[in-house]
Each structure stands twice: as structure tokens, then as C-alpha cells.
Image (tube, rainbow, N blue to C red; front, side, top):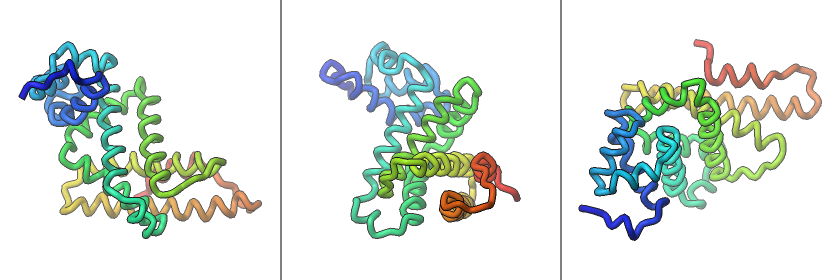
Length: 220
């Protein structure tokens, strides 16, 4: 079916294409070829599609991840999350994202490869932060001080590391990924306890850089 793009805003076209792109990015990567294939399937004029994503791969990936953010939030009612402990909320939100990404793991792998390029490090960090911020806010976090930043930095590290396991996980129902996530969430809970001691004048020296490194590259 050909869409009447004349009646759609550019934001509408961008959102439409963002939902379709992962299916084509799995084969062509996050490229103009993938964008053109998605546009053809949807009946969107290729010039309009290019206009929707003038900045190329990074903009396409960001639009897709924005849709994952929105779908994750739509998966839970406030009442559902309110009935869980904080640990359970964060776990449920991360697992909801994995379920949304599962049909497109090859597209995710290709997005990770693109974001791993040092030239794209800033955007990779921004997307990780945005995902963590969405999850913490959904979990009810209202901190506006030091805690606001540490919580997002740590969860962003946990989420990024979990995705690296997830794209190669062939276990049933992603059992290996779920186990990895559970261990990392344990680290987060331990950190919150350690941080409370540290900020209350504890004598032990705490290194956030070392802690974040252990979350992403845990000892085996």
C-alpha cells in the first residue's frame, strides 16, 4: 500500500521508517541501502526518506532506540511498577527492552558495531545514558543530586554490557543473558550500599572508574 506522505509530517515519516529499518539493517547494515529498502516496502518516496535521515546511520539508530524507549514504557502501567521492589523494576525494564530487541538481534549487532567506532563514542554514550535515564525514571527515581548521575552511569554500563551478551546468546529464553543481568544488578545493589557508606564518611577509598570497569568487564 502506498502511503500519502503529503499528509504526513517529516517526524511521522521518520517514526514510520524507524520501525521498519531494523528488518533491512539486518542485511544491509545501517546504510542508505537499508533506508531505501524500507522506504520501498512502505511506499515512501526515497527522497523523502533521505530527507528524514540526513545524518545517516547514527540518526537511524537513534530513532530506532527511541522507539524501543517508548515501547518499553508502554509495556508497564505505573501500578505494575509500583508493586515491585526497585531491583525488580529495573530488571523488568531491561528485560522488556531485550524482548523488543530480540526479533532484530542482527540489526542490533550491526548498530553496536557502528557505535563501537571511536568516532561515534559520544553518541554511544548518549544513547546508553538516555536508555538508563528512561528506566530509572520509569522505576520512580526522582533524584536530582549526585545520585542522579551515578545511578544512570552504572545502569548504562550494565545495560550496554548485557546487550553485548544478548546478541550472541543462543541459550533457551536467553537464560545466559538473564543470569548475567542478575549478577550485574547484584553489583548495582552492592554499589548503592557501598555508596551510602562512602557518602556517610566511610574510610574505605572508593573508585567509581574501577567499579564501572568491573561491571562492564567482570572477572570470570
